Image (cartoon, rainbow, N blue to C red; front, side, top):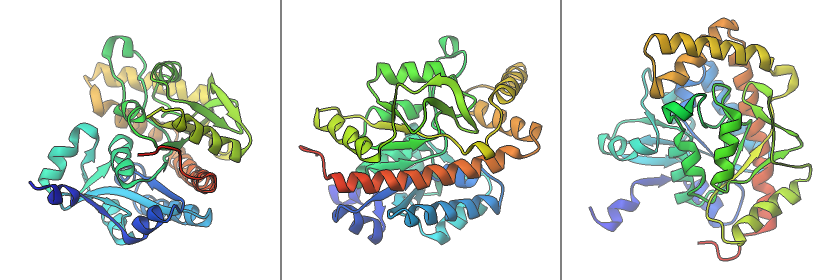
Amino acid sequence: MSAHDRTELFSISDEVADAVASGLPVVAMESSGVAHGLPYPMNLETALDMHKAIRAGGAVPARIGLFGGRFVVGMSDAMVERFATTPDLPKVSTRDIGPALASKGPGGTTVSAALVAAARAGIEVFAVAGIGGVHFGAQHSFDVSADLIEFTRHRVVTVCAGAKTVLDPALTLEYLETQGVPVVGYRCDDFPAYYCVSSGRPNPRRTDDMEELAASVRLHWEAGNRGGFLVTHPIAEQDALPSEHIYALIREKQAEAEREGVSGPAMTPRILSAVSAATQGRTAEANRSVLLSTSALAAEVAVAMSRYGAPVGAA
């Protein structure tokens, strides 16, 4: 394969490419959640509403997926609809990128794979509801999300509502500290937990000022750090689920899944599905709420960073 052919692995929409080249704010998103996060048509409506929220905030949305042997950065509405209505769409994590591209089929990027493409496209801000992290019992299972590894590799700000509720917040924060990834709560003291306002653990830092946040990111990179930056902000209280009840449910459903031999990548969707059933679908509404709020905040971050300017010595 020639060098020219390798560049064709990334198909960047004209709107996204023009915005990046002009230094305009852009917000990247993954696409696995379109197929697996919510039922149809709620998944499609939420995905398109995320795009609207980002545009309303003054940034360009850039959803990332795999299609026809290429990363597509800036999926069209028609492509998003195809992902939303395709049953059993493969999830693509970092380890899956090569085989997924070679198959030339569609694939929904997880956070880790989307970060690879966002960084390659020159996008500095990424929005997601909840990140992957360190699983409960990881001292024995070594179950650590690839998301955390990719945060150490790319100069991308990830705006999220903390880690997914099925994960151990203390171990996740400890891992991020070890890897030198800053975690800053925007107008919140506690590290959020996806559907829940608080995980019961504090954010290492808090800021209430968007310009200070943008400066913190730029200075982190100007100092020579090559990895990412995590900004957390919780779900709106009126849409949140009670953390004690949810964590108790998760422990119960995880124990059930383990007794049935479920492990590895199958564990998280199994638990989330069981929790959704136990809460009579309330998790779906919470998921939608947090996706929209993190998208809107990510647009604010992207706009503030574009005002602050490019980092000194950026590659």
